[in-house]
Length: 441
Image 1 (cartoon, rainbow, N blue to C red):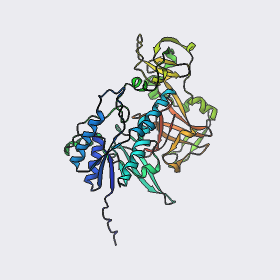
Image 2: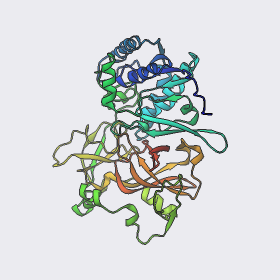
Image 3: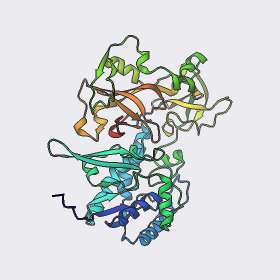
Image 4: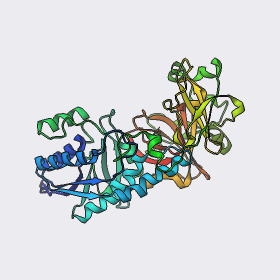
């Protein structure tokens, strides 16, 4: 006899309704599917110091969110998590910038607020799941031990894929998470919102720091970090030194493996863990010393260049930044290539092809490595091929991961621009762009 169809069982779901179009359509789709949906709006920030969009942006968002909830026909709830947000996200930001690192508050916001503090508030309201408007996908399977394993996959809209922002989530957090718009693109989201007459249909996407908004970063950071005048030192590069980093050279250039002369290789077995399709790939057999050398950030001293200006404090800047120094007299833009917090000195280089902007690898301390798929955690001495990104919207980059006793090394096939301490690196499978893990550079 054929299997008896299982009756539909509606889920109890809280949608993190921000007032934006993405979360609005997430709520709409869940309601249309027949689930029991409530809207939960969270306020996470009061202070307007350094913000660029006016004094009452969150209040405006709340009004729109209430109108959306009313239009869809779902209950609306409000929660103030600003104290928790300041402690877990903003204070972390201040601490990281003070050390000369570049944090990603959106990643922390998802780990610490949306899928922790906010999720706990939602569960106390009697729901079983929390849904957000992220452009990513989730699925699950049961392994041979009978355990349910949850997976995060890149969203179908590659221009909006937001899986990177969820790179620090755990299996427990994923078990309660839903991403209703992960399989549709932004134009379709706009169309659905407009068709349903949602007040957020034409609302612009939010920008800047999660729940704070677009800010003048130095002004924002000066709430806690004091300005301190320092020197800007320019590091000069010859045309020969620049040549490997021109756009044409990077597009067609040699891989890192090619530049390691006569290195032995180890075969990458054909398995889901190694993400190899077709013929087995080869991985350069590098020693810890060689990995350390490839992943070292650029370090300079004032005598390596020329003082060309002053800055307001090294902690207010980040590697790869080109705006905010207000130094002229160059044919091309100048970029920050190194920051020395101890001596309050910033080093810059002219042009996109300056070698100081590029690195072949990076290192993540073992204490900073996070495996979304704990069942695929690498063991010491193991190496695997993955796709990696170090910032939102960066195209996925081919790389080899090496697990060593002192940390996880990521060596890219091609040099990467603007690698900065404090950023998150996230790695994905080749086969279906599943995000496997992440870590702080």
